[in-house]
Image (cartoon, rainbow, N blue to C red; front, top):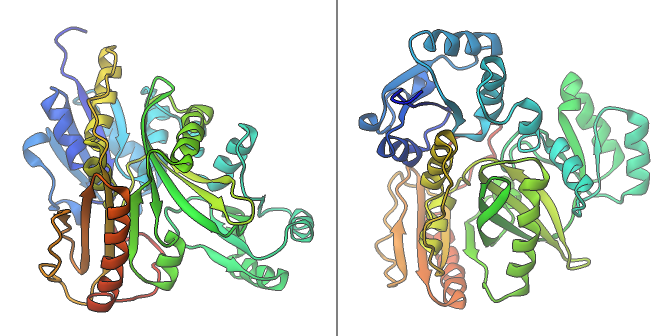
Length: 401
């Protein structure tokens, strides 16, 4: 009804999404943040929030639904937004329970469940590395007879490269499944395809990709996660065939998997064997590891803010319009550091635009009008970061940021 207060319930199990919250407030929508107790005093934009509520970690689905239902006794939430990937399923369950507009659990699975997204992408005509669900042992034996090793045993609902195991032979798989016990059906087995890894970050409005930008990782994220090293990614040359091919592929991906509106972070691999692009995964969120800052540096588009503008436009029945974009080239270099506050002042190229501030991390973003200049800087700086700052630690079982 006219004159009613518009409200969003935003859920965040990790500290992120501050620009989304600020943009909502600037547009006249009152955001409430539901987070976990340990993040109650994190760096949230309190001036933009109508309310900040926290809850203990590890609550059951019923307890979370009861919490939100209790919160809604005094106010109506027009949209429920998951700011982090690990909150997508929770938000979907809340929407279904309260009949709030947005993706339900089945639609959300295509952006959280690696088995669901692979099945959906393959049915939509995308090339996907050969995979098998981990349920029926006869299926697994037939798969291993047909698809040469090595394979990757992946958790179906983790993010990034968390929990992935590289499997070299059938015996190693059976031992891994013995360890997993009743959890094994929550994994997918996939062919390991050597190649170059790309990510495409997008804005989707009314089932159309209105904006996308293509970047290429230096070393595969899985390799950096498990073996350590320096993480880099850079904007792909817009005149290249890689840019054109991935832009075309990505334009069909999110709509093909059922997304109406939102932001996506999708990954593809260009296989060394045949030079073709294979779908790896897609998430209905803003990319992590400072990728949102990288995208904004290269294009002028703040994905968090555009996501908020999309949701507000939908709520009000208005047409979303993408802002003007730029076409620079950007690259980021990031690593775990031995010291709590590493000093990067020794790096002084004029192309440096952002020095990342994160405890026990060294990182920066560079920008140039020349993609080769960005490539050269990343190669030079990643080697120097490894020499000056790099620390290593075992890959975590759960996300830490």
